[in-house]
Image 1 (cartoon, rainbow, N blue to C red):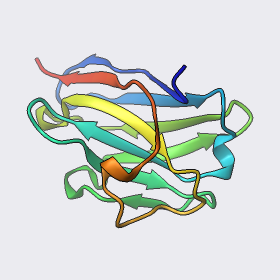
Image 2 (cartoon, rainbow, N blue to C red; image 1 turned 90 degrees about the horizontal axis):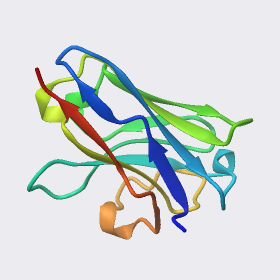
Image 3 (cartoon, one colour; image 1 turned 180 degrees about the horizontal axis):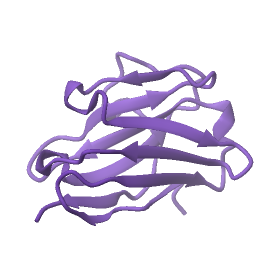
Image 4 (cartoon, rainbow, N blue to C red; image 1 turned 120 degrees about the vertical axis):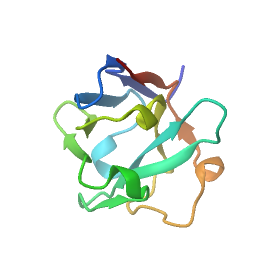
Length: 126
């Protein structure tokens, strides 16, 4: 059983929007910082955005600034990634992850995060 579960991916046209969800059965997500990562075909997994326990959002990927944001539904134990004005280069598998910290570990690369979901595919194409 994976600790985190992503959903909401799919096929969307350029300029469209998607909202991804990250749920957890084992953790209370409101107690921890949660990161979203993206792995494009043939590329390494990259950290794109993170929300801290106090809801401070840090964007690590310049290309998503002004288009992507995160939010919490604490009652539902869900983290959302809202993606607007999607571009073809946003295509990839999106993962949520946590290290059970209450802050976003800026210097940690993907390989350093401990708990992951299985990923959800996002394809931006006409």
